[in-house]
Image: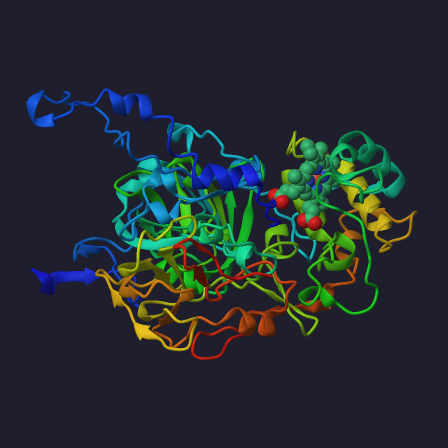
Length: 401
Length: 186
């Protein structure tokens, strides 16, 4: 995936465009809300006119759209702010006509409609979903005026509901030699990826629910593959077909794209798991700290290999590190909120966070990742994200190239 | 009551739906897929050639289709864009993509399998009319792009027998993921 360069306009929209448009509505507000009856009940809620979180879309049908991480609290991403990445736009699919075909190395090639999928015993779980190109803006070329949204906004967390792949595999009778399957979408790219059966059987889902309602079209309505902890592209949206086989299919998205060339002259293939990372979402560009004193540093940490066990924060450019509080719940393969109370002395400094997961993996500094992967790599950017806090209280992204 | 519950799925370490002991291993939901409906959707083409439909095409046939249906987005010779560059063998030596961020990956210097080209063009291109190409057109386009990338001769015909035998320059470059978690950064 080649990310379009970030335009000045997109940056401005992200930083300041949110305010202004609703100012008129605000002036209609009562001076004292206790002296006027409030508005009536409604069939569909809306955000307060004071809250205008927005994704930042770049490109068109092959585009990406970033979650405003700095506007989110806790760990769940509202469904209308979930990041987007498509290869040929968002298809419109009639749920009445939806079909999932499972065939290939199975005893009983079967077609499931949505109703059939929903009759199976279901599970719900919270987990993150992240584009494998997330973080690119901070790896090679970089710039100070990047917000958390533009650095890492291609990750989101939802509560997903669906039927375990293990259940469906049992239903169709997957044959013993079947080690891979092709997952194929019903979009105009007929996007397809090969997935190893064993891992998918462990915790993969065909998901039809997102945060308590049906999936959003941008997230695969009416049903998608969900592989907790694995790069977003493998979580095929609008899934229409699963074909079991004894080897991978070698589609374009697992050869030309979503592979990782390495400095030793090879390219890593089927690099599904998203390694541990974290980002401070406050304070971060474009906020300005009003004065010295106590501030809550907060952010999110996540790992595709399991639970986050520790997040450490440094407020002196990495010389000292101290453990941050992990806010409950701390779930495997899920955004985890961290907090750290910081007494800013008013001086220039750099603040950093680093995540550790249950395998003992420690989020590396950018130099270490560049050493292992080279500057030419285009996915899996999980290096430490620094923020420079300047004497005047302004905060800028701290990886300058 | 808990004692009579059966944990489905066995080996997983996380939440699984629990089903009463009387629940069967399979439920009989869904309906058998017919051979016809499988055939309509079964698009994929694999490295061993499985899935390739009957048909044939040469570079000169593909060149004409390319000019009409592809050049506007990929450039007259596959290099100019505005979208993905399809032609290029540089660098002829080595595979320095990890070190050199400016190197453009193309069919000629990066794709490990020729069959992927059939699979992808057939499923996703042209971007403005995906799924509209006939097998002979796809074989011709594949022959044209492989010839432009210096991989096959201009006269070579691509068909279900010849295409899987084309060896791509980057074929041996791909390695499995060796990241395993733990302290090592790979």
